[in-house]
Length: 237
Image (tube, rainbow, N blue to C red; front, top):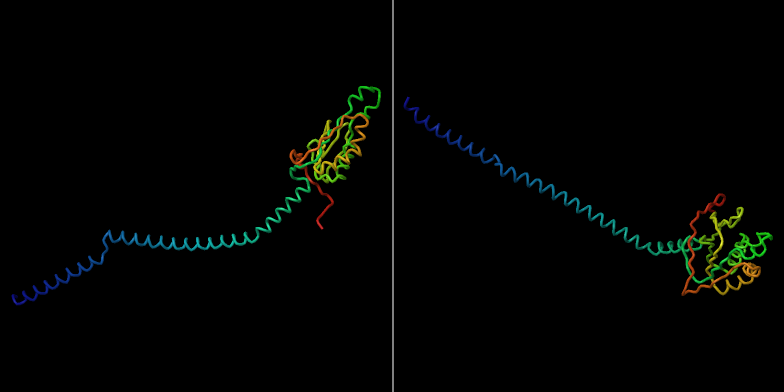
């Protein structure tokens, strides 16, 4: 029996060493909590770096798109400015903007004193009719007035001046005397044509009418047309 003690002891020693070595190897291969945490942080950092790289690439693409749009916009600035000027000119010609300039202002009122002196006479002979206003506006247009208004109502191509009973309507707005007619244009030319037409006739028959000329230093102001344009039969060609 004793002759087996030494080999068995040696085998046990060797086996113990091998087992201890195996445990050591396994221990070295198992990550510690600190190592696990570090690996997780490294993974998060890698993911964030990838996302940052993606966003940077997208930002670069967006910047390139913006530069392209800016280049295109810059190339069309002159065209846009030209179109804006045309639109503004069209609005001016259509009476859709407030304007000011030299011109003439005419005031018309009923002849109340004449009616008092002749109470039995026809009262229509002593009041301002829509025809009187219409005639003066027509004469001002002949005098090349560029903008006209009656009691703040802008006269445009579709304006109506008519009488409904004892009421005068301009742009469907009811007006009452005194009537103030404003016209922008050459004051001297407008005065000349005014004194040779309806205004002179009203003055000669006793109506309290008057006018005043305005210069560039004291310009006349005329408001924009605020009504609507209605086309039932007109279409673009």
